[in-house]
Image 1 (cartoon, one colour):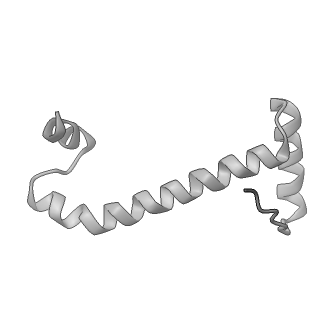
Image 2 (cartoon, helix red, strand yellow):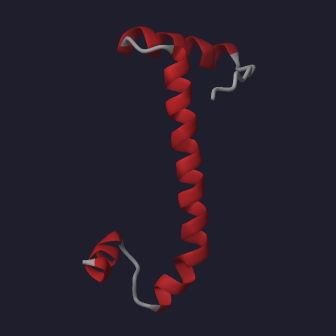
Amino acid sequence: MRTVLSVSIPEEISTELEELARSTGRSKSDIVKESLSLFIWETKLRAVQRKLGPQAKEAGIISEEDVFRSIS
């Protein structure tokens, strides 16, 4: 199922979106969908990092390398 969403954006962003769509051969809708999906994913990731960050530091997990070492 799909939902149609109408948003107002500043003219400058609209122009940049139009140029990006033209230069990449993609639709503006596809670019906006991908951007929104990435924004949602990053927001969820930051929430998990805030929640688990203190526990990770206590366990000595500070860098991405520490994470990979602990799970491999």
